[in-house]
Image (cartoon, rainbow, N blue to C red; front, side, top):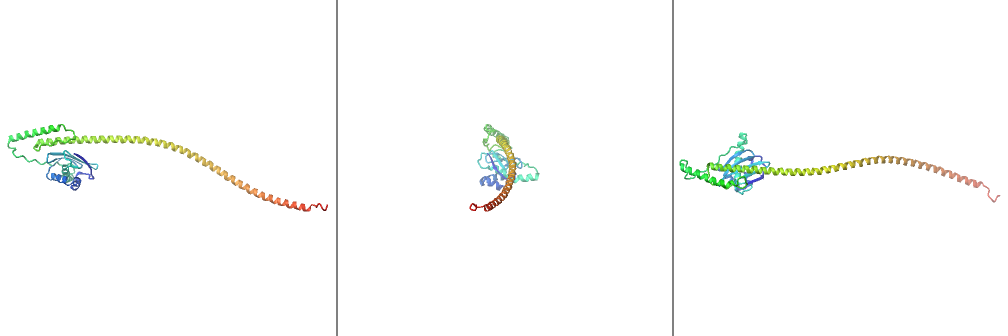
Length: 299
């Protein structure tokens, strides 16, 4: 069972019991805390952000791998439990790291946490180290149970399916080999999942790069068209600047002509006044001449 949840902590020992309980709920936390209190947790490998452990559960020993990376808490346990977001065995491991991991890390200056020895199973009645025949029977029985378990496991090696539970009667070396096989298979699956995740990430990155390349080509085309438009606008601006210069010249010439016309108009007005004065003089002379001329009656 493998799960991933968002997490704000930077190191595993920062996950205090209250935080863990708020995530998994009271019942799962209670059982996991009991496992931790009963010293059922065996730490195999550990640093500030990762721990590999085994927990002696009710029906066998289960392997856990817990990682805290990039704001994500990743938990994986070989148990068949459906508890979410992670099981009681992972709870026990996290509690162990909280109570033991931080002090050991700070005292030693090293992220390595020394393994906690697993609880030794109680010897079943009727078997004694002083009785060779009973010991031989026990070893043969364990070997037979281990072979039966391993035959069921062979077809599941390298696959995501969980292993069948081993018989509680298996102890000692056989139990250790079961733990080794489960741990190696779990590490293989985890590395395979990491490889698949990395491959998917690479494929996504390649797809993103291809999309960006296409978008870049589109941007290049738009940039080329924009440059052509800029050149065209630049030509138009130069033509307008030339037209403005010509317009300014024409405007100046117009102002000069307007001034000249105004001067000529003033001159014409002055000449008109003079002509009107001459006309009045001529009229007066004409009237005087008529007055001086003899009338027809006197002649």
